[in-house]
Length: 368
Image (cartoon, rainbow, N blue to C red; front, side, top):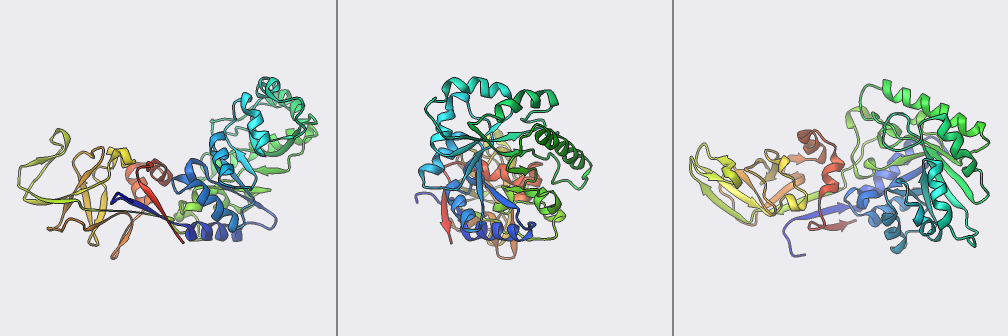
C-alpha cells in the first residue's frame, strides 16, 4: 500500500446483508446477487464469494467481460449477463456457461452464423421486457410474436423472463403497480406461446425489500448487498454499509482573511482559518460536485473548500491539526458518521453512483 487513501470493505457485512435479505423472502424464492461494476465498487469476485456463502443461487453482471473475469477467478455459480452481448460473442457464453439477455428476434438472426454447428450446448437466455423503465427490452406483442419461435428452438433454454422497476425506491407506488400489471400481461404472452420460463423475476433490491409479494420465482439483489437501500421505506430489515473510506491530512496551513485557495481562486477566507489537504481528488472518483460536502477530522465535520483537484482537495479545519491526522470520508469517527446515502442526497444521486466512481487508484482492503 503506497497511498494514505484506502477503501476498507467489510466482507462479513456483505454476507450478513445477503443472509438477512434471504430471511425476508417467501419460501422457495431464489436470490440472484448482482455483482456488476466490480461489485458496485466493492470488488466483484470478493462480493460473489460472500454472496455464495450466504446462499445466493445465481449471480448477474452487466457485461460479458465482467462475467469472464469472474469465471477466471474460479466463480462457478450460474451467471446472467444483464446487457445483451454482441451476437458474434455467443460462443464465449456457451463455452463459459453464461446466461444471456435477449430482447429481440434480430439478435438471434445476427447470432446464428457465429454459433458453431457442432456445439451441442443449449444457449440459456433470459428475456428482458420493458414495462416502463425505457432502457432495454421488448415492448409490444408483435415483438414477442417475432421472438417466440426462436425461443422455442431445441438449442435454446429459456431460463428467465424479467423486467425492472423504475420507481421502487419512491414512496408513491402508482407507477410500480402499472409496471407490475404490464409484466403480468407480458408473462401471459409467454405462456400462451407455450414458452414457460424457469424463472420469472421483476424485483430488484428496493422492490424485494418493500414488497415481498412481488418476489415471484427470484429476486435480484444488487445495491442492498452493499448496504444501499431506502431505509425510510423498509421496516423489515436493517442492513450494514460494507465500505469505509479513509485518508489523512498531508499538509496543514494557516490561511489569512482574504487569502484564496484552489483553482480559479475558488475559495476566499472570510477570517483566519486552518486548512488541511487530503490526498484524494476527481481522478479517484471524488468529483468536483462534492465541493461543499463534509468529512470527519478528530470526530468533527469539516467542509470541503475550493475546487476539488485531480489528486487532492482541501478542508477547513476548526483548529490546527497535525499532518497525518486521520480523515474519514465514509464511515464513523467519534460520535459522527458520514454515509454514501448522505453524499448521494447532497448530489441528488444514489449511493452506488459514488461507490462505483471510486477508481482503481483507491486501494481496496478486505476485512472479515
